[in-house]
Length: 507
Image 1 (cartoon, rainbow, N blue to C red):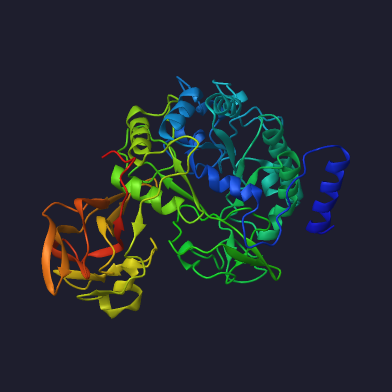
Image 2: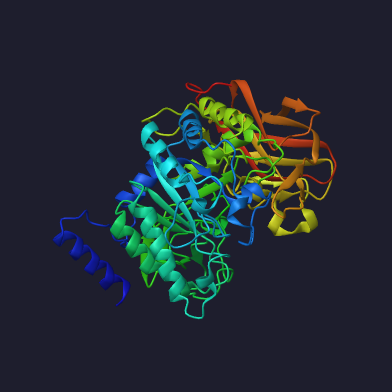
């Protein structure tokens, strides 16, 4: 039975039993009701917690005994209180990561909390706390399972049935689930996962659940090979109906942890028809970019960077989940809780109101020139610093260096934000990384009536994201980043010139 007929059968059966109708993904140029709800939520807290928390790893192999999981002060209520106080609208809980360890008492495995020293059903605790504090509840579930024996069976249907059984538990026993985030399609072909079968089951049990599969798109129509073939980076998604859905159906796009550009488009093809698909971003609170908490407290990202990433990722009909992982005690660390709560207050998030924007950007796609380009390679040309994308960058060939952006002299601005390319070093865990600025001394200059004048100068390293707010608004013909000193030729992901309304912001 093909997917369309199967969905029709499910819908008719549901109607005959008086059940809520599941919403089928149909060709459209506008969001359906489920996608609208996703966009209205907009901002969620990602919670990575499980086996990896207790072994200081990001991806474990599913061989550690269940007894390894042993939080000493587990407090799921605290997690959701922090989410509420920070202005998050939903909590996305990692219920099973790639190691296969389950944070609920599953009837289909003994690799779960029920077999550990702390038998608390974490899924139950988090879902109930979400209802208590007025947040929506969402579920992450790994397709890949390094522990479950049926995953390696010659008859992969056995594992698909295992997933169906577990997803039935998750979708039946914990109240409303607003989102299912599927991950880990690493070493099977696309068809093997039987996503239409999974999608149908979940929609039958949770009709209003938005479902997304990581690495949603491909450049080749009908691509059914391994997930890494012909993947499409979000930065390429600036033209409607150019790329194809690899995993169908999906209610939204994912490429963890990439960031979509300001010119992100929403129309994608499947079997000759165009579907509307928003993008959900994932970023880490940790400056070292780790998903699972480590035994040693880690520095969080600078609030300026988090704020600018918030604006970029929640505009244009897209959404953001920010990872705030509990530690081995089972609590979110105070320094991290404070950071996300302060971020929410700084941005001015208010319950029941639309998420704040970063103001009017007047530099994206503006004509941009530079004093030099690394190896004269078009990949690093000046325009990459104002193309609205975070995977592209201008790279200079020299120090000193200048980047010049032409502006509309009738448009005012009062804020500059600069995402600098930093040299980075990867840690031993293979995921965490540490960044170091290149730019050490620089100025911001504007040109008016043919003359340049400096409006900002600094001899301090630029930081992860440099945000400069001016006490007055300026108008100029051109604006210039003038780098006087740097450890290596400078490189800029994005140079943003913005007029910001500051009614609700606290700095």
